[in-house]
Amino acid sequence: MPALIRNQDARRFFLHLQGLSHAPARRIDTDGVFKLIEQIGFVQIDSINTVERAHHQILFSRNQTYGHDHLRHLHEFTGAVFENWTHDASIIPSSYYPYWRHRFERSRDQLRQRWRKWRRDGFEELFDDVRGHIERHGPTMSRDLTVGDRKKSSGDGWWDWHPAKTALEYLWRTGEIAIARRQGFQKVYDLSARVIPECHFSEEISVEDYIHWSCTNALDRLGFANPREIADFWDGVSLAEVKDWIASQGDALVEVEVETANGEVPRACLAWHDYKARMDEVDETPQRLRVLSPFDPLLRDRARAERLFGFRYRIEVFVPAAKRQYGYYVFPLLEGNRLVGRIDMKADRKSSTLNVMAVWLERGIRPSAGRISKIEAEIERIRRFAKLDTVSYQTGWLGQ
Image 1 (cartoon, rainbow, N blue to C red):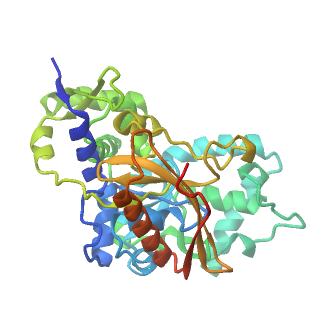
Image 2 (cartoon, helix red, strand yellow):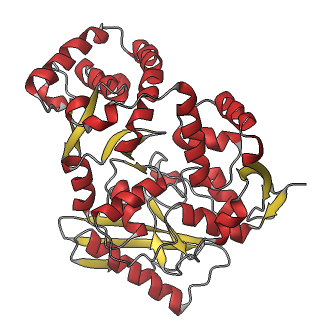
Image 3 (spheres, one colour):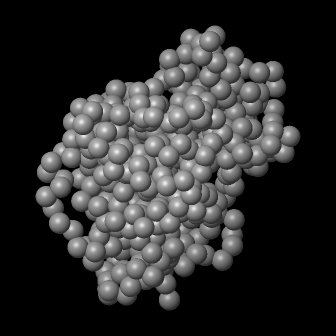
């Protein structure tokens, strides 16, 4: 009969693997930031800038001494990380680049077929022209390319991009070009060979090694998972490939059952055979209350987060305002190993103010004086990180 992992232990283990059991006030340098990214696996990028962009918030929530220049140095100056695709646009250690070359190959036909359905005006003929432009002129932004008279609206998706932009995205997603830097938040592209350190082009990885690496590294960061969760972590291998990999592992993997937060039937999962020893080495999660990004890897798999933490979270960006339960871009609150609530706040850059509209605590979580003090202390840390001058609390902000 599979061993049972208690919910409290499962939470603590997963939080540790996701870099959330380190002391958040410990001093960190650029090397430390790189090790943190490596531990998490990848850091998602998102364009929404309600308070701070997702990638900065994800790293700051794990260490309050993190600074924006740490990531810029790793990306633009040392090439230790690169930007590409997992389940979404992400920052990834460049040492993983040899494995991403298999992802590029897998993406090529899939993206051509998808974009061919959206565009029937011969956009594929531009690929060579766009690649040639970058080869001759170096770092290039979408606006540097001729797009005719059409203006892109803020609501456009891939299907509405001008052909040159579509070609840029295709070349990036298939590895022919890379993001050299960002200007504001706009991508600046160059040939991959001029962005990615040369040492990462020499290693040849077989398909079998790519699948093994993907599955192994997913389970290392999940701690326990079912086959679908392993496949979804990097979103780079199929469920069938994961199942074949599991069958090949023999005694390296064991079956376990993971207790859920809401008392439902325990979840059947797989774990490394030495998972108990790994769990014994985990530190207690700091009790400090922390604001998480809506795109934090702890919450990326919403169903898994709900099973582990009893916390149902959905981003309501695309929900009409009148139908939102909470708000446009609401941040989860982590206290110790519990997700205790969510906060609606927004930076007003013109007045240099962090506006706090509302805090909703989960059922059973009391708004004690100590907890309110923790919330206010974290809001103050966020204000400083976002380089704002003041905090403004809306009347009734903590009565939700």
